[in-house]
Length: 73
Image (cartoon, rainbow, N blue to C red; front, side):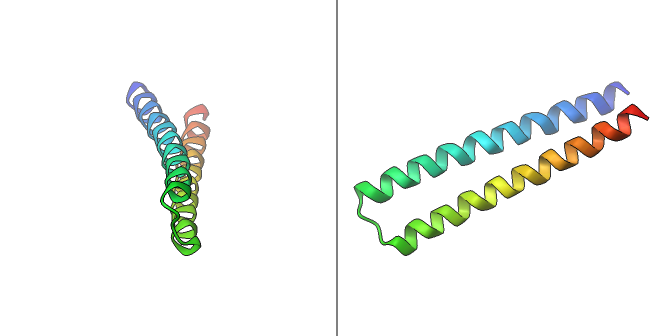
């Protein structure tokens, strides 16, 4: 059990870092896109990259949830 608890904690930290990093990237990309007057296609690319990061975080959270469900049994 302690090893599985450590794995759950590690995956939780990873999910938190992915969410925080993606959010910071998205904010900075939006600000820099406005300052540098980037084309809307480039801004949309940054938005899609951020969306991919958030989807990855959701996958990590789902895996974490499934691990905890197995831990209770």
